Amino acid sequence: MTNEHYLIVSYFLVAFVSVCLGVAVHRLLRTPFAAIAEAVAGRLRATALQRALSVSLTMAAVLGFVSVNYKGCGKNYDEVVKDRGYLVQMNQEQLNSTVDWIVYAVFGWGVVVVICLATARRKEPERDERN
Image (cartoon, rainbow, N blue to C red; front, side, top):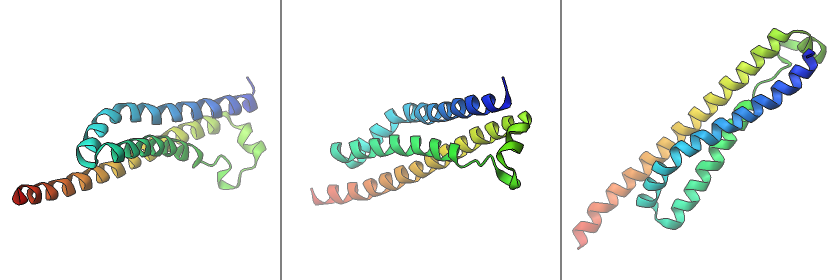
């Protein structure tokens, strides 16, 4: 396999793996997140939050993947294709960047959950005092 073919195949393979990572993290978090969202926000808003979680984790994976630039340090296409080690390094950087962006998205959603839980707990005592 030539380096040019390797570049093409590895690029799409890493893109596929990146999206699969985003989907896998969503599948892991969707059940606990759905339970928290329904308890805090109600049925309609919980559905919207669940869809937003799905989209944001998938987009984080894609953004992490595309954030890596093969032509860094003033390299042109011929110089990039020439070095197989550089191509492997870029694939690893793409996967690392994908994981970083997914982690940032999960932390962001963690903040959203904490805020939702904090506001829900503030509302509960007010309801009890009125009854």
